[in-house]
Image 1 (tube, rainbow, N blue to C red):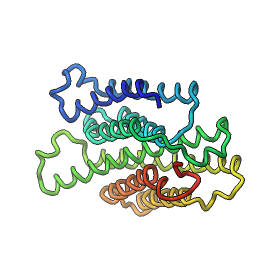
Image 2 (image 1 turned 120 degrees about the vertical axis):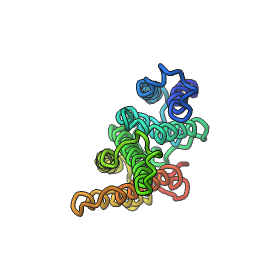
Image 3 (image 1 turned 180 degrees about the vertical axis):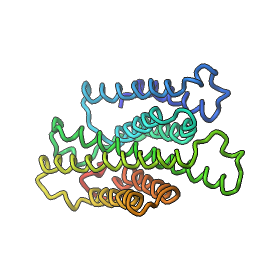
Length: 268
């Protein structure tokens, strides 16, 4: 990864983070336009990733995966963190900054399967884009889930001073469902694109690859959560807990599983 453009993005994300955690450290005019600042940072981030993919010898690995996740989270922030929902920035901005900061310092490790794929295979960028869009949706759903549980606990204890201008439980539940549904659809399509990529590129069987099986388990987890909501009417705290656990599983899949198990998706 080229460090200098990403450092510029990191600085912009830091401004967004400070606007939420230490508002007094950011000028009032900038603080009021923090969502626009986040949008500019996300566009710069996207342009940097695109330039790297088009004009350099691009070999996607762990840093690029973390960077793409960071971009997805900040994009989710831009679309939802306005009005009362601006409080979501307290969770999303640090997540985006930590992911990008980690991407800049971890050693580059390429996914093993890429050694057997054609770098020009059209399914590769589609597969990656859909998966990271899914991760962004699940990150947003998880962040909203944390905030939902916080507001719910404050209301149960009648600590209205703790929630101030935070969104209502109904609003949070609606955002949580939509972001989880978006993430699920993107993950479903991403898995399909990955299957097309593997079928076109790999000579050996890939269906029993540990990462594939793990991803299908995560997919099934979210499938159960959505069906429980749509069919059984289970929502609110139920969906919040499903979102938080599911996103934790996604993070482990991205950072931990690829190092632990030998598979097509191992970093090596």
